[in-house]
Every structure is written in C-alpha cells, then in structure tokens.
Length: 85
Image 1 (cartoon, helix red, strand yellow):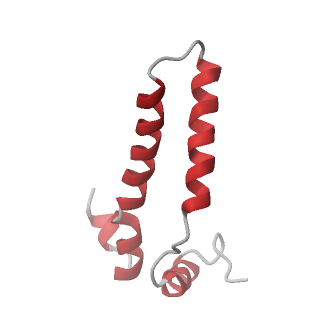
Image 2: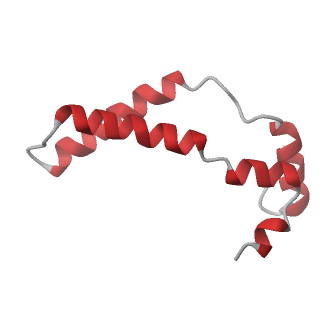
C-alpha cells in the first residue's frame, strides 16, 4: 500500500502526508463539542460543527508551502484532471 505513495515526487508526498492541518481542525471541532456537552438533536450538533468550521476557516492564513511546485507536479501527472490555468 505504500508503493503508490512513493511514485509521487517529493513535493507532492510532503503535501499528502502532512496531517498537522487535519489534526488542528479536528482539535477545534472536539473543543467546540466538548464545551457544549450534549445536543438536543443531530441538527443542533451539525450547526455547532458548521459554526466551528466557519470560525476556523477565517483563521487560516497560511497557504501550502511551495504550492507552485506541487501544483506543477500535479498538472504533469494528472494533466486531464488538473489544468494549470
């Protein structure tokens, strides 16, 4: 299962295996849910998660490191699905 991962160039591999952003997002959602404790309905839980995601997206300022290199590699590998324009 690891072999297909190694077919990608180093720039793309770095983007794929970086999970810090995902872990930070999960942490924000867990914190919001833990603060509330319980929910009267599934809809109330979904609303809280939506609001947590919305507030978190405002905080995201950093772009992917060396995105132009990653983007060009993806365009080469998947030219029909990833146009450069």
